Image (cartoon, rainbow, N blue to C red; front, side, top):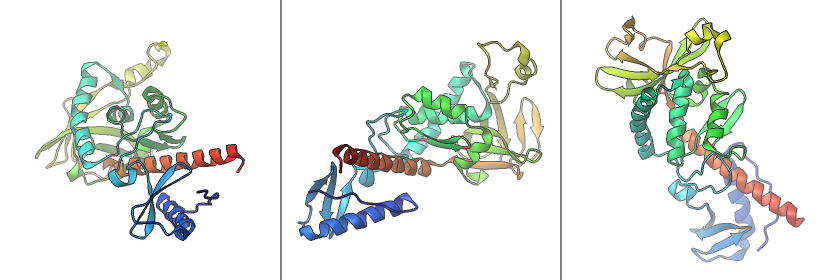
Length: 296
């Protein structure tokens, strides 16, 4: 059966899907289908059930799983669920400690981003970042490897950008894998990131990257092998009761309870939504390319 080109409208992915569904149903309604009937249209499968046609997206809609065999930073097979998020929280403390033992150097935002990319790429999960230079998604055709994606994100994303890639949570709810953003009143922007690696009833332990200020002050001596200005990973802790922060024997009174620290969690739902949008775009692109090649 041939379905002519359909113009899909909608300001959001849900609206576009609803519009597509409505237009397909109007095209198929004259066929008097049987319950459970499956029809293939331009390579896509549709099932008729309970009076309506529903597209079958390789279990993406039913099971929340997406399989991508096209180009991208890595193959995305899964979506973020409570189970994966819990595993990520367990992973962060261990992996950050491994970075530290290897004397890896990081700026503050790079540490948080690297931990997320390591886990997501290992478990075939989608990740996306938005910053002033654009949108970076794991399934984007412009990336062919994990390292290519990692490099593009790390070199374009700063601490202020993490505010737009995370959601606000209460500081009382912070768990391993969450981040604490620091707002600079003088700069009028977020200027620092800390990664939560452990919590209990009394303390919140963090690890953070930073700038290697000694290297920056002696920048004339930087050679090609050492142009990255990240520091060795640093440890710190907050007391929940008072909000006091301790690092290297120094104390900042009440920092956690102040207005310049924000509790943030990665926007896992947005990662999933962006993956679905990306897949819908690829399907539409392939459909219209096939139509163009056939001269329709």
